[in-house]
Amino acid sequence: MLVSMRRILDLAEANKQAIGAFNVSTLEGLMGTLQAAEELKQPVIIQFAQVHESIIPLEVMGPIMVDMAEKANVPVCVHLDHGEDLDYIKKALDLGFTSVMYDGSALDFEKNVANTCIAVEMAEEYGASVEAEIGCMGREEFGSVGAEGDAVESMYTDPNEAKEFVGRTGIDALACSFGTVHGLYLTEPKLDFDIISAIREKAQIPIVMHGGSGVSPEDFRECIKRGVRKINYYTYAAKAGGENVKKHCDEADGVVYFHDVAAWGREAMKADVMAAMKVFAGME
Image 1 (tube, rainbow, N blue to C red):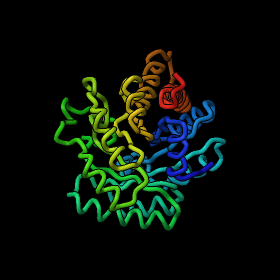
Image 2 (image 1 turned 90 degrees about the vertical axis):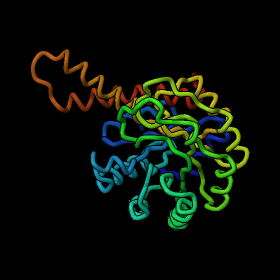
Image 3 (image 1 turned 120 degrees about the vertical axis):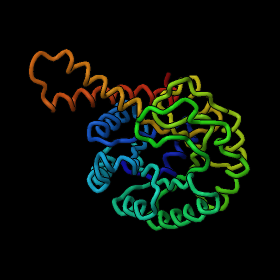
């Protein structure tokens, strides 16, 4: 069943849990994620990041995501992740996405506010929700390995600025920086939990964790306790799929068929997504 992010986050708040927001850049990733959600009977957010346009166009993947969300037997939000251009956000809304993220974090504060307000006005016409970002989570969400120190204290979100930003834009969820980065972690992430608490107290809005792959279950639980309600997850699921494909290819005696490759990838991504969902929902 297709729902907005606002409704998904209401469920998360009621259950004091976080909802997994899984980027899907392939049909195998999409199928594995929805299968995991249905087996666990958990609401889920499926996302398409603008940076993944080079893998598969939004015009191709978006309608498939919306159609499969409508047919799912659990609440599903279809969300645009890291939309950097307002026309791209409009394209996602036209395709039936129920939530969009405007990412103006690289802009100065006033420009970010102005563009986010436009995104909110556009989304309201479609009954869709809006996420926006202040602070910096480092490299783009493409599953690439980054250098040590991508997240530094100077990039962390200021709670007072977060309060002003939310008040002026009217967004539904705020992505902020408290020590996570996109991609693979080369060292254990050091999260500032107090920033989460301070932002939640001042801004009074659900907090979004970007760079969620690779964080320990204990740290996930602490973030959720402090007010994180949406956790973005991509890199480690994609890595699990790739590693399983490599394993089977290495073991193969003879020809490898692509339909088998797709199944191996889907199988591993589903298992990784399911494990993450259990942690986010407090099931383990």
